[in-house]
Image 1 (spheres, rainbow, N blue to C red):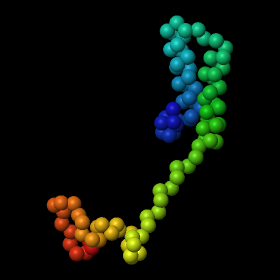
Image 2: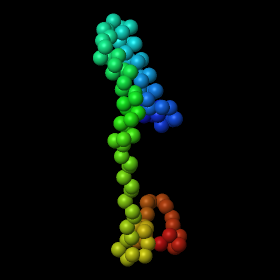
Image 3: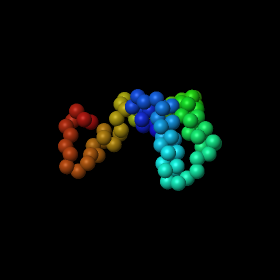
Length: 95
């Protein structure tokens, strides 16, 4: 539902279409369709369109990088001290 909405489709239309499709599939498989089922299928789309954005929260920001113990760079001290993966070679400007 939210994947379709993220691609520009209305959340109201997408959710209602999903519920009506499920309602129709259930009825075609021999299930009973009551008044409450029809009301739910018709109303959940507009309600989701209102309440999903209302209760959504923004993703938290990633933590800011902290300077190393000498305070001169944000690069990890492990890289500065020369501990690199085996087979990698770094010149003196990397330190």
